[in-house]
Image (cartoon, rainbow, N blue to C red; front, top):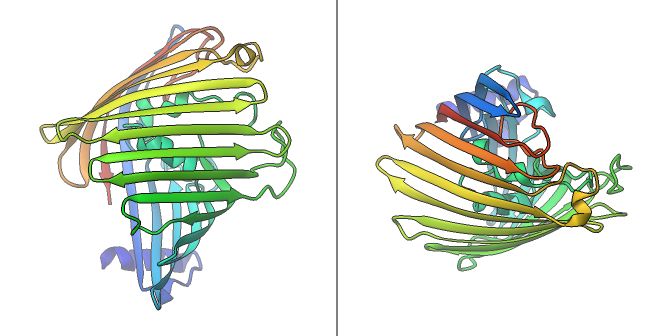
Length: 344
């Protein structure tokens, strides 16, 4: 009740008419850490944000329209817990700004959100694409101008299947271009993303495909699987990205295991480029990412954590772990942190 009242007050200050909603919730995560990173003869010691989960806050709600139909909204913004800067340096509601209709048919959603491809990759990365273990740190745009690491798209129309399909699920996203692009992919933001999977009991299998651009298209395909044995949950993901004659293959092997009141995480990611990508002058070179971390749960909402990650670059590679100093081509980047995360 308190969260709902606070959320209503926040929307009232921003001019939102939330009083018609049947439920409104204020939610968020604050994650802060002490971090040490080094690369190419330099090191950084800092208090930083988002070591385990991205610090954020938002409001969401639903309205029951009757006949099994519901309307919903979701507004979410990043906040840097070390400085208090909101919006993550971009649009204030840059993490998500959507409105949707839900029913027995599934959900139709409009606005800015994560793409189906990004959600697939996160599901098979124990760090969920955040902090020292973020597998997207070794994914390349291949010079296309497509920011895969952002994993979000503006002007998007999405369809998500209902939850009653016996474990099977799917999603399709279409993002409108709405203007000329500044990159080599042509029309800005024009993309198609699709995902299909099966998640029932201990087994999870998923595949995704995306294409972005109009002239020269950036394409991504990936397949992943995990199985929870109770004492350990191994996972695997293989992704292939293409742009013109350039190609990157990324393999990730990972595992999580309960340990005491917490969770032990580990992953190994190997990124390989073909010759066309390596000679294209786009800082592409084979790289390996090693990650290990431990989360100790003080309660359901509060946890202490420590993580370590290192990236070994080859050739022209300049991939870096979170918060790293500038990386010289072919040099490694590594770091560790100790932090606290609280969700509300």
